[in-house]
Length: 133
Length: 137
Image (cartoon, rainbow over all chains, first blue to last red; front, side, top):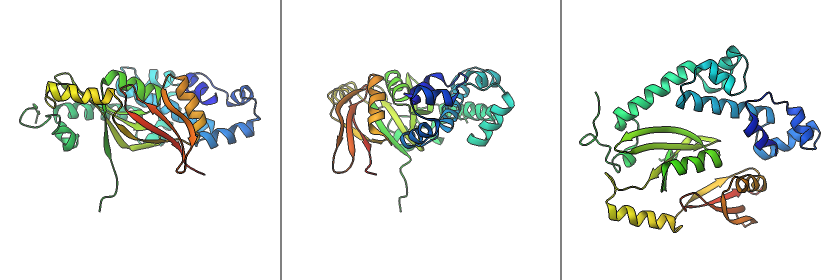
């Protein structure tokens, strides 16, 4: 399946035309069929998978921006950063910093981020959870 | 006037296993994953096309929230498949069914045309039931 191929090979230099050939469709029919099934063209789906993986690596790994860029299949840091900013809203470096700050705040001031129906039920309240002012 | 649902919850037996199931098998995105002390964890995910609805994966363990007895009772109910937590939508149920089955997701019912939609039923790694539907076009 083309989607699984993209899911598993997003970091490679994927040629959508070759994926279409492997799927035994013409390029036109392949793109139309893919979009009908997954709501996005194969190009846009590949972009979404790469950026989603980049978000995950920026959030939960210690990789540098350059390493993240190469890990998700882009070869130019400026193109990657520009695309990331266009799609996500902020550059990768700022995204990473904002996430680290938010995670830190969630751990130290949970009541500012976690809705009360969950926090209170879990006992994450001021009286028994150490909040750092 | 209430306008939207922003957070909801799925009770799970184990955070690591639920992460593997929802993120690596179903393809959900991790919204927040933060340790909360005393072995607790705040883990929320979101469906790929619905990032503004956070789904909290809440592990049932004895601790600040549950007594030993109530945790055991709730864990048993989950394992026994007592809860149906929701309906997930797809554009192509047959393709999604084959993909998820290939990843080891346990289906109770294959895609079947019903009055309201074409629907399949599956269980998560804890035992919770879900519908997978493709709306009538």
